[in-house]
Length: 296
Image (cartoon, rainbow, N blue to C red):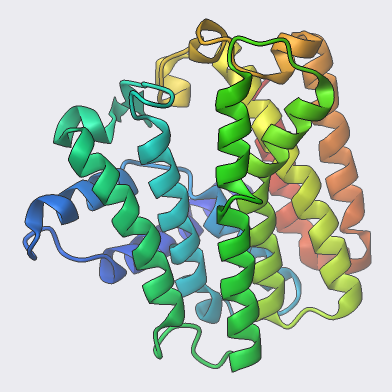
């Protein structure tokens, strides 16, 4: 199948699993569960879980075994977006083309919904039925990888430095720290977990980790670019919000042309990193091109 069909198919697979794994809207506390599901099913691209599935496929793994971890990581990603949109942080009114969670359910419920999604992810990862057929040792590595990527040395740490950099003069090392941690950490975790569950050998693991690190940074640069050249329909949120808040972005520091060049450079590094895996990694190569090509 072509990439477009593949992305739709794998996203549908993840959506079906998420629907089963999240509490139903009518289950008490109903408003909290409605809020959780509102943001999870707001129409995201599911890039992170799809990358996890594709990495598992690239090393010949059984993708059914990685689906619970893919769903857990998507729950964590969604919690981060719910909190990121709050007035205390980015104060966004729209996300994925819909009103943000706090605009629908209020700030208090949005905060609690994010908290619940984060804890639900680890409830899922530690459940007996999750990661069926995966050894206890690999399960522990999966949980450690995702927890580390989500915490103060990963996504949350990147968010803090991002907030501290608003309206200030920032340099390239600071910008790379923000992007590598705030966005790149969960993307790298997606690839790493897919490789772990898929049974990657050391050579494949190293190749995939290099791919994950570079494509994660490229993904965030592409998002920076889309905040300038996109529109509400395309990117699902207010356009120009980064510039208005004085956020640390690649176009703000380097200019739009240089940001695009850097994104292409990282894409090419990511694709080259997959050489040891041969044609089995073609989906990952296609996704790397898709991530960057959407900005042109």
